[in-house]
Image 1 (cartoon, rainbow, N blue to C red):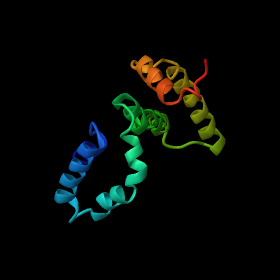
Image 2 (image 1 turned 45 degrees about the vertical axis):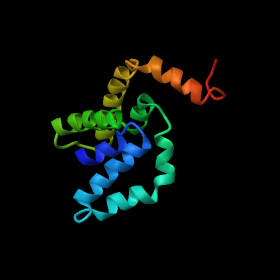
Image 3 (image 1 turned 60 degrees about the vertical axis):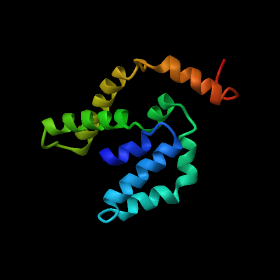
Image 4 (image 1 turned 90 degrees about the horizontal axis):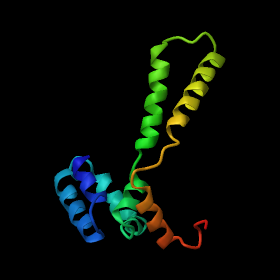
Length: 127
């Protein structure tokens, strides 16, 4: 993953291509489909590198989803058996309400991201 991260965290498309070549040289014998998939989807992926780093980080991060799932697992792990399906659903619902309260905060770099989105998508941004 560290070698693949160098591809999608590269500063620009040529740097990403170099990182992909390094990844391929090291990992293609064991995982040939990874670099082949990147090359096959290059037209779609090259769009990604047209955005500034802050926007790209927002696009590729899965931290919010992973954190949400981790918190749900934590709640259900504490209790091994649920008497009914409804009791499980109720516990998950209440946990989701609690998790949602924490999501009302703003990203630390939101002002920069918002300004960049306004440049790229001025016609879609609300006044």
